[in-house]
Structure formats: structure tokens, C-alpha cells
Length: 247
Image (cartoon, rainbow, N blue to C red):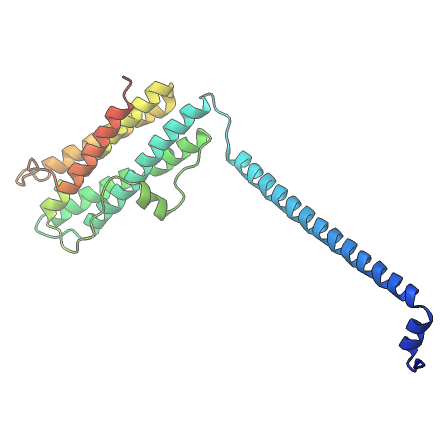
């Protein structure tokens, strides 16, 4: 029989059973340590998930406002007003666009007219957004959201005739007036008198802008057939109005 020469061989030679016992003990310790590590990892993930949910709830609670309206009613009114707000932003940009690119012999008159109208349109944005927040709902947060929500079409053409500018803006203001009347119906159904009263003033302003745009270009043909894009928007708004009416 070969005699052990190395120390480790001597240990194994002298205590073979003890060596196996220590190996088993180490294996069980490693397994127990791995289970404990997995448990701590799962617990940490659970706590992070709970923390994220709690943070989201705190953020939502910070943005919520107690109101007298039922939650469903507040959501309906807010949705209608957010669509109005997106259209108002779109109409403001288009009015400014035509104001900046106006040409022709009536430049000064048209330029001042559109400047005044753009200021009036922009003045609507903050009260609309604040009204939505008073209802405890979220309002427009980005240009992208405006683009996804707006029903008034943009005009990116480089050259637009002055009378075509006025005609298009007149049509857009009529579309906005239709949307405002529809939003007023939503407010009436849900008993939101405060929002309805604001809408009435904005509706009068939209009709006044349409009147001025028409009268400023009586030599033009503002009674011609609506542009296809504007006609599609108007028909879509009318369909939505019919769908919202009680049967």
C-alpha cells in the first residue's frame, strides 16, 4: 500500500469519513446560502414594485382635485375640453402662420386682423387647461398630444393666397364653433354649469371671428364649397354630436 506523501493526502488518509462529512456540510451551506440570496432578491424586487406603485399613487393623488361632479362626469367634460384645447392650439398656430405670411395690397388690414384674432385664440388656452385641472383631470402635455387630438387640420403650404387664408380660417372657426356647441351639450348632460358658461363666451368669440373674416373679404368667394379636409372634420364632429345625443 502506497504511503501518503502530501499533507492533504495525509488528512484524507487519516480521516476519510470526516472529509466527506465536511464536503456535504459545505454543499448544504452553499445551497442554503443560494436560497437565502434568492429570497432576498425576490424580497427586494417585491419592495421595489410596491415602492413604484406607491409612488404612482402619490403622484396621481397630487394631481387629483375633489370636485362636486361625479368622476365619470368630470372625465367626460375633461375629454371634450381637451379636444377643444387641441383644436384651439392648432387654430392659433394656423392663424399666426397666415399672419406671418400675409401678402398683397391689403397686407396691413389682414395682418392686423389676424394678429388680433391670434391673440384672442391664444387667450383661450390657459382657461381651458385650468378648467380641466379644476375637474381633477389631466390636460394637454405636449405638442405630440395636440397633433394626436386636434381635428382642425394644419396648412404647411409655402404659398397661400390671402383670400384663401381668410376663407380657410373662417371655415376653421365654424368647425370650432360646432365643437364648442357639442362640448356645451356634454356639460349640460353632466350638470357642469361653470364650464358651460365659459364655452358660451368662447362660442360668441368664434362666431365673431368668422364674421370678421367673411366681411374682410366680401370680394372673395367665401360661400364656395368647403375644402375637402375641413368638410371631413366638420362631418366627423357632426357624427360625434349625433352619437352623444340621448336616444
